[in-house]
Image (tube, rainbow, N blue to C red; front, side, top):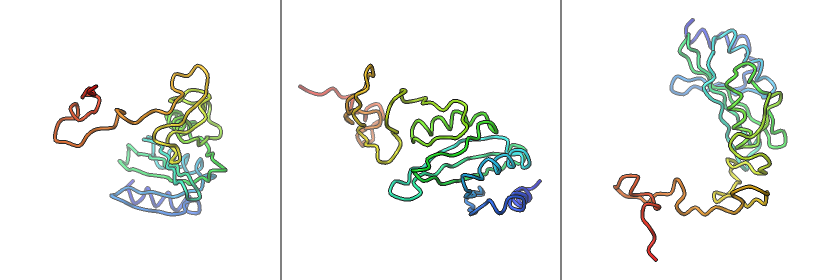
Length: 191
């Protein structure tokens, strides 16, 4: 089946559920409603051979409505094709249906999105935090989360104060020197 045939089949079978099509560098992206995601995902896997879920990402469009976007990246090994599905969620809804029963690898992707952005996945078998500790009240990848962090008064947690950015893992000094020498922690402070 050619690339054109694959996407023609998708559009002829589910055209009413596909809202917007965009093409960039040979990759196709469709905007879909959150309520249609599972039907489209199942069809893509079963009928179009999109057998590999590459990634699920989330975007915080802080200040816009709907605030969140979830982007699903699929790949078809038999056809060597990429497909991207995007859906938007408002902050008050803040939940999408899981696809972890369609692609088991979605389990960890959805958990990471929940942990970092606070977007929940209905029907997920084990939706709990994987990077932040249980009970942490914030979502660090949201755009309204300060770069220096937020204080937390949780008991028995090692990091409860705002973290200074000086000497952080991504703070370097511009220069032609190697990364080891640009790192501020490589130069001891003079007393």
